[in-house]
Length: 187
Image (cartoon, rainbow, N blue to C red; front, top):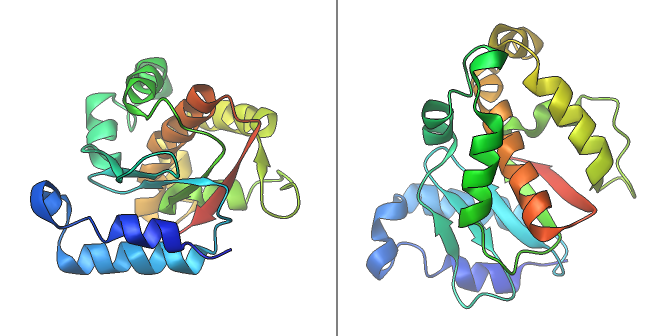
């Protein structure tokens, strides 16, 4: 359950063309979080950050980076606005077009997963969220007003801002990969 292959790919971050993808501190924190997650080797990893989405895949030679993160998704697709103004389907389609075509069952790392952790969803093997369960959960969450998220997480209002965008990334990953489950991991 160690992530040696992902650590080698992380070492390519901050070098050459990837230098703009984060500060040394950011890259060190990302490495630490992925190592601590103890994600099984057979899973791909999608790390959803504020400014980038990183995909670690055993089928890709290098790290796959989508140079847009939570902040941009929220702004570009109105994900923090009223439910009827959110462009969720468009966001999921946009993300699906940018995920690697080889994406398989994955772990998702992000700080907006606290809502899932506090939900009544029972994780398979205490680790995996089934696709059907997540689809229903995400649908319920997208119908909530933004202030309801903040009320659910009063000590962590930033997490509330991440929820809808993070769910769009997970849904895009599930649709693109055809996976029947994914592993959520909270940063």
